[in-house]
Image 1: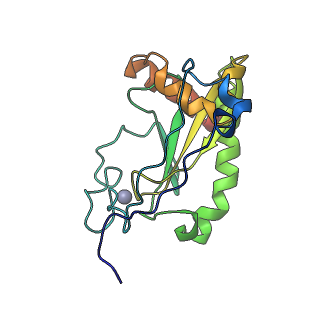
Image 2: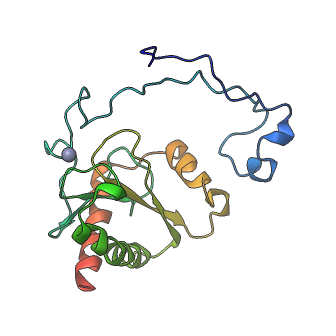
Length: 192
Ligand SMILES: [Zn+2]
């Protein structure tokens, strides 16, 4: 078994602009010309994430993230910082586990019910076309999912474009993000 951390393996360079998902190109938050590029060399093994052995401490367990706007026995719901879409929240498990596969049966069973309530609560804010749910897990090893409200009528932000637009739109003050999360929490509590 190799201990090399880099590999010469690369995914191939697209051969033309037509290979770069042309149907989505017009909704990117950047204007042409964008040019295809090859992916960086693979890094194997991957570097440790926050909250796993060898990585930085878990910010969720050490309460270094934003305080919860809502919680129950399995989940905590938090506003983001440095975001552009009020109504965005992230939900973390009470238990320090990595992914769906690691959740206790009780937490896994409650996930769908809570996700549905969070979605309804975000929609109740108004001006929301759809609520997107993302689970990446590439930054921290503490299970969490993101709920992002796609602004009503903002079809450019449909599908995977919403996180890209969220990144380039001007940030709103963190106090606004928290206030919106607290309204989500109040609506969530009202549906209990
Ligand atoms: Zn943790």
